[in-house]
Structure formats: C-alpha cells, structure tokens
Amino acid sequence: MASTASDGRPRQRTLASAVTVQGIGLHTGIPAEVRLSPAPEDHGWTLVRTDVEPPAVIPVSVRHRVETPRCTALGLRGVTVMTVEHLLATLMALGVDNVRVEVRGPELPILDGSAAGWVEALDRAGLVEQAAPRRLRRLSRSIWVGDADRFAAAMPWRDLRVSFAFISDHPGLGDQFAELTVTPETFRREIAPARTVAFAAEVGRLRAQGVGLGGSLDNVLLVADDGPVGGFRLADEVARHKLLDLIGDLALAGPLAARVVAVRGNHALTARLVEAMEQVLEGTEGKEGTDAGHR
Ligand SMILES: [Zn+2]
Image (cartoon, rainbow, N blue to C red; front, side, top):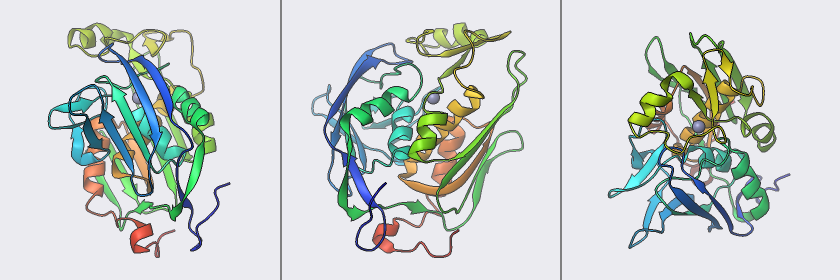
C-alpha cells in the first residue's frame, strides 16, 4: 500500500530505475525504442524525442495534442510522438506521477496491442515514493461534450471511475459495456490485457490512408463480419480497450479524480472533454488543498 505524506495525503511516485521497451508502431510500422526514466517531484510526465536534434521535450498536456487519425499524438514545433495513449493510461492507473519518456522514433511501440507490456515494463522498473504529496486534479462541476449519438460526461468524484458504452450495428459484435474504478489492481486485471481493435472491413481503407501500417494479428484484435478472429482475450474486450484509450486520453489532464462516462466515444471526443475540463479543473490539490465538497 502507498504510504502517506505527513499531511495524510498519498505521496508522489516515480520509477525506481530506468527501463527500456522496443517495438514497432501500429500506424507507422516504424521500430522505436522507449526509455522510461525516474523524474523528480512535480515533474509530471514528459515525452522526449531523442532522435531529433536538439531533442524535443513535449509535456503531456492536451495543449500539445496533435490531431491524428486513430490514435493520440502529442507534439511541439512540428515534432510529434504518436500512439501515446496506452502508456499514459498505464502511468495514470498505476499511480506513476513523475516520469521521463525518451523515445527514439515517431510512434510508441504497439507491443501486443494492449497495455500489458507497459505494465510489465513498470513492474521491471519498480516504483518508489517521493516526499511530496500527490497532486490529483479534481473537477469543480460536471460537464459534457458531444451530441445525441456520441457523448462523454465528467463529474466531480472521489477517485477515477470510468464507464464506456460500445454501441455498434456490427454483425459480429454486440453492444459492450465496461465500467470500473481505476486502481492498479483493476487496471492490471480488467483493462491492461484488452487489445487494440481493428475491423476487417475497414483495414484496406485505413492502410490506403497510411493508417495501421504496422498492424498484424500479433498486435490487434481483428473483428471480422462473423466475430473476433481467434476469439476475445477477455469478456467485453472491445469496451475494455475503449476504456484503456479513455483513461490514456484523460491523462492529458494529468492525474485525475473524476467520474467519466462515454457513450460511443473516441479519441477526438475525449480530447474535447479534456479541453472542456480544463475550464472546471481546480488545479492541483497538493498545491491548493481544495478537495472539500467532493464525494
Ligand atoms: Zn488503444
């Protein structure tokens, strides 16, 4: 269990040691090497493209989001890192407050399409507590974005609880619903193993657009007209992967306590939600100590 700082709040955490992960990007097919390193208190999460000169330091923030099809990308002054969402979800869920992510390549490795490899990497690195209290961001009031067909809402809450409704008329896939309070344990068990989903009917069109060039049965859950090729890894795998993406995109707000419900959401919708949330986030409770009034 996490210990607490002298004021009773949980403490910030970083990695105990650096760890390296290699693999190809889902969309570019380009090999990348990622080094996750410890970072000081209040550093937060930063991405560093180390294969450009000078290295580009990109703070993880919705301000640096770059519109990209089918993934979440962050960039600064024309240098981007694609497909950051599975790593960010893992950092958020496992309670890693401070980390430096050095990337050689334009896209984080997709690994097996899930977050299991990122969990395994953080386990290899180990986590250590730091002296400063955690700075969990909280909402001052509820908000929502979207329209009648596709929407997402965020409400003040004591921890991070997320729900996703996957509603589809796909012949091989029913509606799926997944919901949980995000803890290291629930994330490891119920979210991290869920793989990236690709629909067979759209693979050709996406590849023609230059999307999914690194995709294969080794790193996506391929859903054909008659259902998932090779079966699901866990129940409601599609909705669970959508929750993984949702958590990763919410991480663009930083470590967060909120109740978030998404119906037919996607990366673009969550980005809109996070942008809207910036207006109602109370900043950092470690700094301002304003966590009264929330359940
Ligand atoms: Zn994903």
